[in-house]
Length: 140
Image 1 (cartoon, one colour):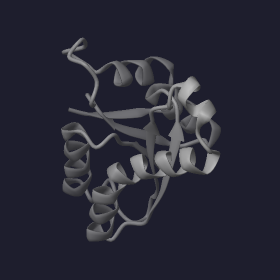
Image 2 (cartoon, rainbow, N blue to C red):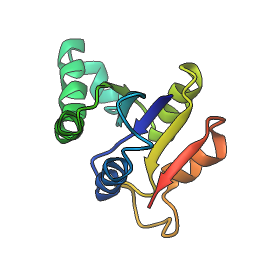
Image 3 (cartoon, helix red, strand yellow):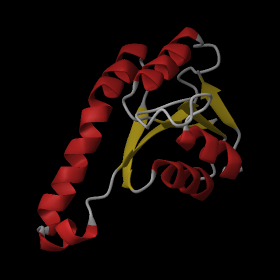
């Protein structure tokens, strides 16, 4: 099974990873994992004056801040994963990647680093559930 795990480094990402670890019968080494992080875009006016290499380095560093503990988690569990970051709105990134690469399952936390506006369910989770054709497992 191809599994796409959407992460942002929030406490709900940690809960999602704990759930994966607790259910190794569902999420074992026989699956193919991709971990995705959506990095917020630098405002266009600022990006226009920055060197492309500097901008790319910024995006990579921001993604790696999120990926570093998750890489350690996957290594500890003995699981292999591809780590991918995309620049853009998180829900758009997850939905586009899930459909483009034909994943079997999207796994994500119910909330992220967003505002408290959506107390029952985070706005990214809401958008992914509404727009994604791929089955999604939402971890609370």
